[in-house]
Image (cartoon, rainbow, N blue to C red; front, side, top):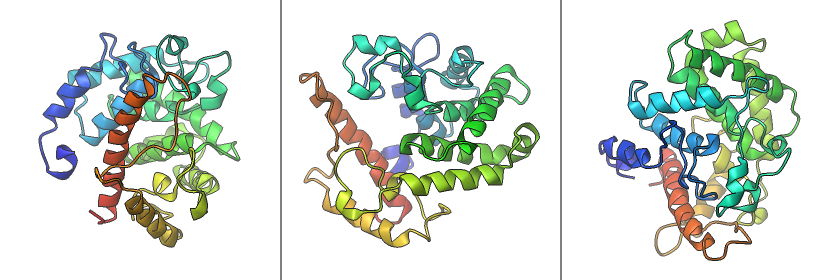
Length: 285
């Protein structure tokens, strides 16, 4: 919070993140609170990568270069994906949606692969093996999104974040991808609108995507169209705030009764940081 709101040094963030990083460069150890696998996984590495991106970590930082190496080594050439769920997840406390079984990747597709691919492009030299791996994945991810009529909100957000990162590489994008950057952007925005819950009475229950889960600042291209319901969402957040100044989560594991309360507390912290960031974007804090 100090880095985001008080301009503190990001060195503490790097130091703390490093405790979740394994020797192979990937991340684990419950950095994603809904599964506690200590081994490296692409999904946990995505969680760390988002934070590293936010603090503008340098590609020469050891924590970044080793992460890039892990992602390059674990990419699946045939599909352009990374395994979103690993079999080892089943050996540790985890939410039911993180349970591995045959064919589970179909539920996840390019969540979080399209963002991982963007990380490789962003933190690698053009023409390098990691960059080539990233663009190969991006090519297949774009093909997937352009041929999809409906998409889960989490994967939609992966594509939104991918577009933010790759916007700085739009020229290269146009030389490598058969679709224009603008057409891909329009397609992703269509999917955003399809999965966004704008019925206020349905908010607060389950895993629904609220407007502020998908439209995170006034700079978002859909902000003006949905400005009124976003105002409702801001008020909803304030009304749901606890005396501690945080929010409770709207989901549960349904199992691991001794472990879930710990995960729930971790999630309350994650949710607080994410929501205060968004409220700050709208000048509400």
